[in-house]
Image 1 (tube, rainbow, N blue to C red):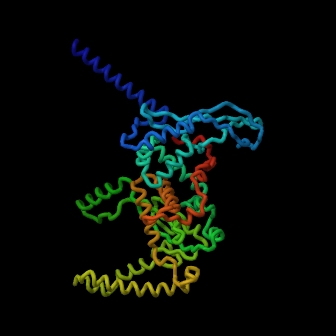
Image 2: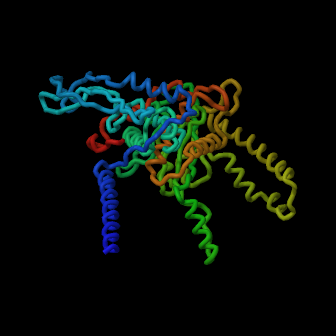
Image 3: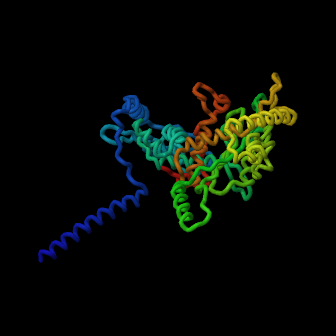
Amino acid sequence: MGDVGYGVGGLLVVCLFFLMCMGFCGCVFVFGMMPPRLKEVSRFAPDLLRRLIPQALMRRYSGLCYDAHGPCPSCGSERVIGFGWLERTFCIVIAEGGFRDVNVRVRRYMCKGCRHTFLADAPFYDGCLYGKPIVDLCLYLAASNPFNRVESILTQYGIQVDRDTVKNYTILFRERAMEVAGIPVMDDSKIGLNILKILFDVDSVEELREMYPQAKYDAVMDETYPRVKGAKKALAEERYVKEMVGGRKPKYPESFTLAASYLNHLECFSTISCRKAPFNSLVAEALAKPLKGCDAIITDGSQCYDNVRSYRCLWHKMKNFFNTDPFINNHTKEKLPPWIQSSHMHQIYTFAEQEYVEWLREKKPNLVDELSGSFIGALTSNSMEGGNWRLKYELRADYVREESIEGRSLLIAIKDSTKTFKEGRPHRSFTNTNTTFNYQKIMGRRTIAGQPIETYIYH
């Protein structure tokens, strides 16, 4: 009997534990998300971050009421009446006693004509449960940090935002940017984003030139390949298998194709696209559409750019030449000192550069300086190579979804184009001087692909 009693008691314990787990899972299923993890601001964080920011948010927004409104968004009627109040969470701050909600009150109205209900104007983007300043801060930090790092930084500010929330805001920014500035291709689909449309409200360089005729417009196009999350480990395993059983070992991991174009003199990204599909001429031509009106488009020797390029990058041309240079090939086995090869290559490159510049001065007169008479256009794709490096450096993490990496790449490109600091000193870019961009231009859209706003609630 003792054994039976012990078995029944153990069974009851197991059943109780199982029910507790099911109850927890049921809560997760009902609410659709995990509860926020408990956090504490580091004691080493300065008081300016640890105390002042949460207190300022609570004093500024806690209990604030918003009742200003316009006409009915459904029918445009001015005949509206009050229909109660709605309490919304502007943000959540991290205090010593735990999380504290900073709530505001928003007036609700009903149209007498169509009976449509809507909210008063308040600092919230459609589809976002946190206030506009918090969303903008998440997007700004996501331009230089992975999602989990943004969560860590905001923790030091005393603001509770989960990494998945930052990811969802980034994807939402990308989706709405695609509606505003997506580059159309066949079958009404869109490949890539027109950054000029986002920054300057123009469809092409041709329109931008009308606004700023004194600037020089030469564009550079190139692509890079950030790897997919987990691809490095998969590549190592596949190479090991090929080595054991024999066969050709793969060289590169699975990767995204991140293609972009860059306005050399304006120091501004113009288009960008990120897909898992291989780079092809369709993507190249789509990204070149907003470059209509450029004085020149410089690319490498890839056949995908044959229909869009003005001339090839000098560095890539000379690289291909030295691969077949008889002097270097004939002395490969003799192992000539590096300085001899370097001197030989330098002399040939210098001569080729002089000839190339003279040819371009005649072919591209708009890129010749009026005072000195020298060619000031791009000879190589180095400016875009540097842009690719900055994109990959700021990404700092591998991704699985195209939406995540393209959203972050877009934020990085916008931040890089509007920089105010360069090469260790203050430097205000052309875009920062002449654009009126803010995140509200994209996030303030009221619909997404014609779908109801309620289906795009992110938290």
